[in-house]
Image (cartoon, rainbow, N blue to C red; front, side, top):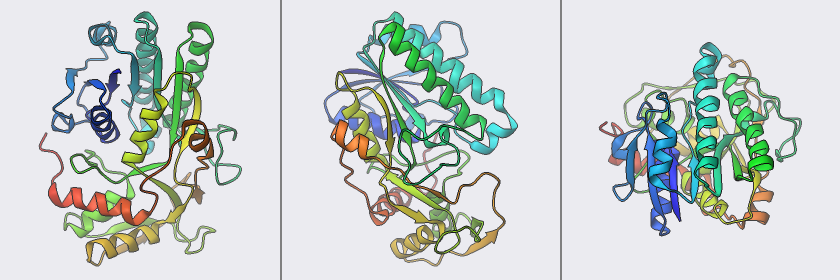
Length: 323
């Protein structure tokens, strides 16, 4: 297929682009590089420097690429920032996403795959979390993603735009070529590995009094390549709707730190700090729907394998991407 990938210079988009190309698809990457890196774009892909704020720029890019499908990864994703600058999040994550959906309809694109998030649920009524749980986001980031999920339902109903929305849990790990380099890093695994690399003196643990076995938050981690494979499976005609992507197993903050110590062979100092507002004690996915309906089978379900690939990439790229 001919696939148009927004945010293909970012962490998730770069690995998904690589996997698409390896699977024989043609890829055009559209990215404005505010968060992504030009050197994170696979050299086999066509690259368009995006200017989504310019009237008609997204439509012109889609028209020129003539894609069969769109994979939409481009978004702002810092929860804390969304609480202080909500207009930035609603404008990019909803308004610009709507421009992209409009372009898909105008250009006759048959499939739209959306990078959503478990943040649309808010604090869950139960875990593991299934797709039918109530969606009550507690920050503008989650709200902006939920708004576009709802728009996609109406676009499917009225314009017949077939879509899949993947609600990610915690993407982690790396391929051999591409890994995680955010200008502001908020994710646990890279921040722990930064300590092992000597780039940070210590890692912070926010809250040690949660109702979990060791008192720290539990999260579900999914390898970036498994995430990419789900998107490729989602391109098949007739597959539509909402799907959680996670491993169904949770690991606490302390367990992740211990695993990073094991893989790196280095002692990683940790400092305990108070809880952050809005952090649920446990977020774990039920991904049975993706497994049964899409035929998805994670190849890297163990936290050990996820950390190993992340560490290997960071050792090769201690300063991340050059641009």
